[in-house]
Image 1 (cartoon, rainbow, N blue to C red):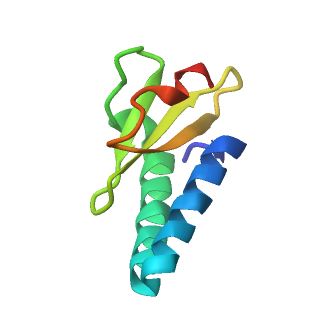
Image 2 (tube, rainbow, N blue to C red):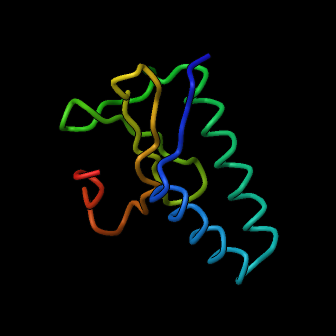
Length: 98
């Protein structure tokens, strides 16, 4: 199993998204939280399984029931770092300088 880290900016995006769902529905927030946890487990188990972005450095994991993608890459130390929890319909590639 690979070591997976979450960048501060990605954690803030996740927290903001979770808060947005929680304001609308506790059930939706709980499902979003569970889907995010499932994504982390899947990436940790096999990080190279998911498609490479067009920059060949980052990979994408699409959440199944929510319009979000986890963008991650391998660090120089051999760990995997989630750099963004990006909404699929907003600001494409805004995370590319992270």
